[in-house]
Length: 305
Ligand code: 13P
Ligand code: SF4
Image (cartoon, rainbow, N blue to C red; front, side, top):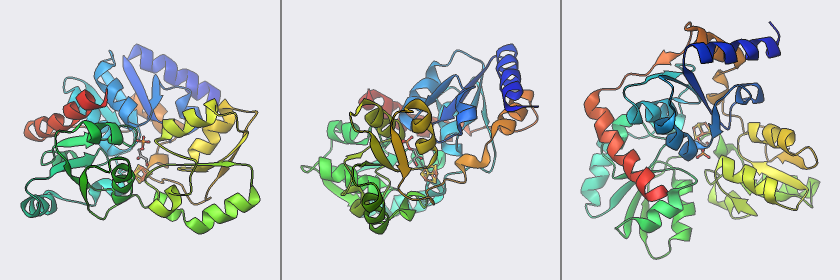
């Protein structure tokens, strides 16, 4: 089967079987082409509740599929590849958070959405990279315990100087591959290019950026900017998507190593097999866990809109 033939088959089968395909922006271009909706974590969470189809196929990582199930328990939710986890989501457990809560009883626990559903049950509110600053500013507490990404936490802290933060050291191994040396090298090679990074990067890298924001934030910035060249400090799929969307502009990866292997466990054939019913994992959540995690996601959607 050619790529085009496989895409046509996917479009036909998903219509017949009432399947909505949601794809995170880090997925490959040929997957984005067959998706009903593409976005960053926040936009995908919003779409999760709205999709009218009875089945949702999430092309992304586990916490994204769990978010869909949390918001739409009546739907069949499929994660495209059962091994597609987010390493950051596994970095902290409930016991650690309980200890931290004992140490800082008057702090609100703000959890990046890149966490397990279990962990969300002991937190106060979720945030995503595009909504974190807005939500923390609106939160009715000036004491914030931010988990698990201390880089995103640092990014939020700098924009909320009137609040007190406790950051716990965790983070994304993919984004931590990018260094100040990479920035110096890329800027020397492309002196006219603007540097756009994801706030999961180390603070020293983010400090050198012309813009820091979520995956779709980076894409929108590049599309709306009058500049013609950009160094992209996030997963390298975004370089590819921008090159497709903006053929008149030039995009360079900040590091050739910024590849999320978990996101790329899914390819077009995986999507085809999922809609045929021979691949993917149907997400099931314990009802107590689902309700506990839903409290944090609902609060995120309420404060983030
Ligand atoms: P976004 O919030 O930009 O979608 O980021 C999610 C993520 O996992 C980035 O590594
Ligand atoms: Fe998780 Fe990092 Fe991959 Fe995003 S890029 S899904 S934070 S490992």
